[in-house]
Amino acid sequence: MNQDLSIFALVAQASLIVQLVMAALLIVSVASWSVIFSKLFALARVKSANEAFEQEFWSGRNLNELYQGAQQKPQGAPLERIFASGMREFLKLRERRVTDPGAMLDGARRAMRASYQRELDALESHLSFLASVGSVSPYVGLFGTVWGIMHAFVGLSNLQQVTLATVAPGIAEALVATAIGLFAAIPAVIAYNRFARQIDRSAITLETFIEEFSNILQRNASTPAQQG
Image 1 (spheres, rainbow, N blue to C red):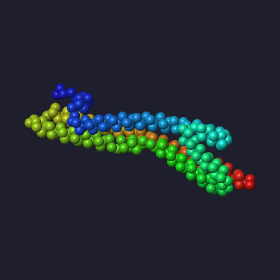
Image 2: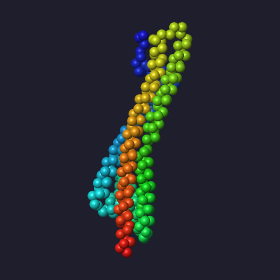
Image 3: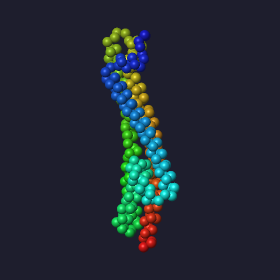
Image 4: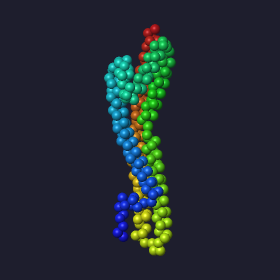
């Protein structure tokens, strides 16, 4: 009854397979927390940069000035890169003397849509890792627990008298694997759900901007034809 049942002692006394499972889960947990913090700061920067550019865009500045500024900031806000891609295509078509406003608008919209998809892919990077950690870690921990309990009962089969004192350490060290699996999975699931909601809101912001900027480009595309 005086056996040491602390977490460190249980891990040290566990079988090799269970220890490997625990080590793998701890490594995955550390990697998961690294992704969580990096994604947390990245999404905060994206939101702040988008809001700053949107405020500048609707401040009444000339589109050409905004475009020149966007070209000098390749690492700017996602909204700024989408704006630059649409404006770039629009100006190219105008330089080629394309007179059809619909063709000019379609080209700009396609360019913005392609840029939008790239931005969305960048925002969603590493989310699949968090989803995998959240869904797989409990089962990996359960595997360690099942293996540990099986190993404990195999060892108990050689004893003539089995008491709670002899059963408890083996089962306790096996259950540690499940606890570590949950420790890795729960933060990953919470972070995944939060980041997914934030990315959805960012995607709505980007799509709304594409529609609003398309309306502005449509008016600009129609102006030369009307003047001619």
